[in-house]
Length: 273
Length: 245
Image 1 (cartoon, helix red, strand yellow):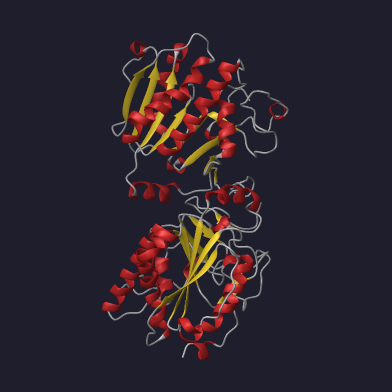
Image 2 (cartoon, chains in turn green, blue):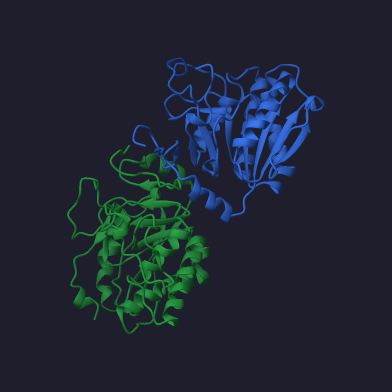
């Protein structure tokens, strides 16, 4: 039980923090369902260097005991490290084009995920999580995270008043959120849910991203801005606390008892070229 | 709300005043174009409660949204003209009542299950069973709408309840479930309600044949079912308060 943090949203979606759930009860509910959980992650250009640590840590902490498919989108499948995975878990390399800029790559992700789901994802997995590759699992990530549509609270903004959320503020953008509106600031590094919900969500986001492109505008935080716009009008059914989307550069406040998934230190200039 | 538990260990929200925004929830409900039904039984002397129940339910139950009231009764002729809110519908369904009082709650589950299959599933998305001898005193809105919803019994904290040992098949293992639910107000999607009523009617039938009159009749079977199929949302005792307490 947690009294120091918000654990239910005003639309009655649970917010998952350490101490709010009993892993045994959840495992006994979800375990027998024989679920396959999918993970998408993009390792394009120099980002392939993050794959090993991502997968090794996922093997340790992500959905242990469940069937898992890792879909690694990459422009160089040959540079993916050979990995021995636990039984019931497999790696699928999904070829993608390399684009001109990291922003472009980032924006094309929604489309790529959507197409994967349409092509094969919907038959292969029940739930799908879309994660950033330049991150590492440090602690349990289990069925407490499963839900129809799941978003994660951005670590930089969970204790910050709404006016300071970096929503897209230009009304000409399809990701526009006016002042005075907004529930949370969600991070683009983690989202997921039932595979058909992820399909709908990625399709909508891709549409709004294209709309902006046609108008010659790029949202403040690329797809993260569009994700936030979407989740304002179509509220997630479950939220993950920043334990599930941490930034190691930040000092850990007392509310964060456990870090489950966080960024890897990197030189942004170097990897984004 | 920090004074109460708002989330179960399996991450189902527990609905208390102050934990939700009805405006936001109403917007979501309207987006999905949902219809909700209410099932209630008014058998033998309980016909007396119909008028009060329908008056308060029309006023307070999902006010502003379409509600289908399915009223099962053995004396339809005793029902005076009931004023329904314009968006609501009333369906009076005649039933036979059993020779012993215990039969009525027992066969309720079977009746509801059968009606879900042949009628309700085509008319509503969500269905709630309410005891007729209740009066709604404040708004009960779309915060109750979820796949499988049960109300925490206001008897929860009475030591007397916790000490009860039962040998009948309807007995719930003590301590294994965290909550005791009242049979006076529960519901969910028609699919979930079909499974629940079917499972509970079979359990109750078994008890009657074996000669056990399961304590609390169908309430214990309901609780056993909900122990194995955890509700996706719980309603706090605000939603059903036993007046005798």
